[in-house]
Each structure stands twice: as C-alpha cells, then as structure tokens.
Length: 480
Image (cartoon, rainbow, N blue to C red; front, side):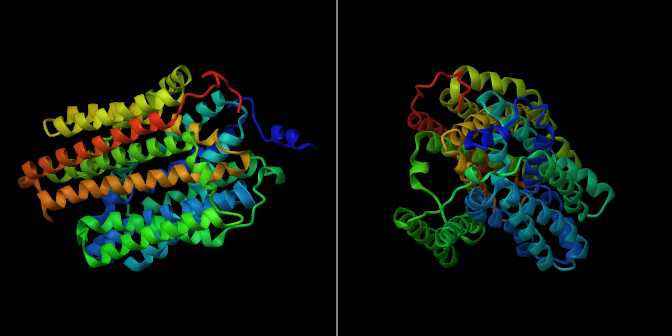
C-alpha cells in the first residue's frame, strides 16, 4: 500500500461516518475542560472533609493546571513520534484509574496526588483531541464542523461545571465530582479504540525524542505558570517568586538554544515562526485570558458580593451554555465566508468588547453580566475554530499533535495571566476578606482588572491580524 492510500484509509468523508471517533474526542475534551473548574465550588466541603488548610486547597486546584500546562508540549511531540492513538488510550486509562482513586483519599496530600495524576492524563489526551479531529477528515469544511462540535461539547462542560457541581453537592459527597470522570473515560476509551484509525508509520515523526528539550520545555512552562498562580498571594517581588521567574526565563533561554542547535529538536522553532501558527497562538492566549478572568470574577461576584448559593451561581452560567449551543451554525459560516485571518480578529475584538461591557455594567445587574458572557461566547467560538484550523493546516501531517499542544499551552498560559491580573487587583484593592460589605471595592478591582485584560487581548488580536498575511489560497478552498 502506498503512503497516499494509507492516508486516505484514515480519513472520513462525512461526520456521520466518523461518529464513534467524534463522540470519543468530544468526551475527552469535555473532561479536560470540566476538570479545570468542577472542584472550585466544592473547596469548602473538601476543606472540612479532609481538614485541609488554605494552602492545601490552593494546591488541590493549582496542581492540575501546573502538571497539565507543563507537560502538554512534551506529550504532544511524543505522540507525533510513537502514535497519537496510543498516547490517547494511555491517557484515558490513567484518567479513569486516577479518578477512581478518589474513593481512597483520606488526606489533602493524597487528593493533591490524585489531581496531579488527572493533570498528567489531561496532558496526554489534550494534544491528540484536535490533532486526531484534524487528521481524520480530508478538507477544511469537515475539519471546521468537527472542531466546532468538539469545542462546543468541551466549552459547554466548562460553562456548566459549576452547575453540575452545585447540583451534585446538594445530594452527594464532593468525591462524586471526580468519580464522574470514570464512566466518561471508559466511553471515550472505547470510542477511540474502535473509531480512530491506527497511526501509520508514514504519519509518525521519525526524529528521535529530544528528552533534554522536553525537560527544558516542561520547566519553562510549569515554573512560569506557578509564578503567575501564586504571585497575587505571596507578592510578585518576593524572593521565592522571583526565583520561580528566574527559573522560567533561564529554562526558556536554554530551551531556545537547545532547539536551535539540536540535531533532532523537540520543537522546530521554524514552526512557531510560521505566520499562521504565531497568529493562532496569540489569538488562543488572548481568548483564554478573557474567558478565565471573567469566569473567575463572575463566580466571586455572585457568591461573595451578591451572596448567591453555589447552585444558583452555577445556574447563572446557563446563558453561556445556550450561546455555546446556539452559535454553532454561525461559526462555520463566518469562518468560511471571511477566512481565518479576518474571522480571528473580528472574533477577538468581539470577545474583548464583551469584557469591556462586563467590566462597566456587570455590577448593575445580572442581566448585563449574562449579556456580556453570551456575546463573549459567540466571539470565543469563532476565535477558537479559526485559530485551531489556522495552526493545524500549516503543519506537516507528522507534527499535528505538536501543533495542538502549542495551542493548548498558549491557552493555559493565557488562563494563568488572566487569573493573575484579576487576583492581583483583588489583593490590592480588596485585601484577603471578601463579602457583601466589600461590594464597592470589589467592583473597582473587577472593573480595573477586566479593562486591563481587554486592552491586552485587543492588542494580541490586532497583532495576530498583522502577522497573518492573507493566504494566496482561496478562502473557500478545501484542500490541505
């Protein structure tokens, strides 16, 4: 069999024929997204159950992002070399086993270990989710629709995570919030096993694994995320935090030098310098920063300033879920009509504008808050799809997981920057105590931090538009 026929054998000519694969990839992305937020509303219950300190609870939520963000890129490049399906199957198995282990957790340290293991599983599965969706379809039209479906499921999970948490905590232990990963992981495992074609040898990268580069990449990203995560609490200029920043910068410089000189680098830096990839990463980071900052502040606003219950605060996210579902047909039409460059900048400006709307009017009533998040969701979907396709279609077939990992890493860094800005504003203006009596101070911190986030995101979107030159290929082309 020729290489060309090998590739064709892995492709589907319709979404219906690929439904087991799409279901599995959607479920995998769902777990990756929902695990980011599902434990947040359960932290008081976890603290009482395990007698955990505030520092311990911070690690319960922070360790997931630290492991997830630090290992995505190394696992993405590893998947390109030994097989995307294989890494996905291992990751889903680890997700099921580690989530089941929550039944035996008795101490905060044991729960932190479980969260680290689920972060490791997510780092293994995340790069393959979009990479496999891109590889199993032959043209951009199907890729857009498949990507829209997968991201819709995942983002619905992210938006509905607090709702699910609030409902389950009314009737069950906090442990159930992790146990729900088990049946999802099993279903996804079966779907990947039967629905994803095997990786052919010609689709894998033949380069040896650059273990030194992988270690430097992990150190750079993990220490950078940790610096951003703890800066608002311990001080940006404290000795320990400056040490983390220095470590991240030094490791990053060593990584760049290593990748420039290695015979078989983990990451070809020419890939990152490609205009479509650079623009896509800028857009993804800007999007993540806006989304996480508003979600973080909205949760605090509803529960601590307006004294809403966790269940009611979770239900407040339903308009975003509805917008995520309803905007699906719009995304494909916008991206197809205007192309990735224009769709990316327009979607980015819509997201930034919605953050400004939230910053200025959310304090007035929930109606304005909901309106801003609905507008943000529509723009967010356009940015996600246009950026993901722009990155993936630029890369050689044997580097699709690396491209997906780059996108995921930029989003995780954007998440950390967004929370860092919001958290710092709250620490400076409000202090360590939050409640209805601090409504005015909270509103000032909320408005100021979100205006800063919107300004940064707008700058990144415009920079991405400038970097990404119009392609000579017609907008409607469906060739790879």
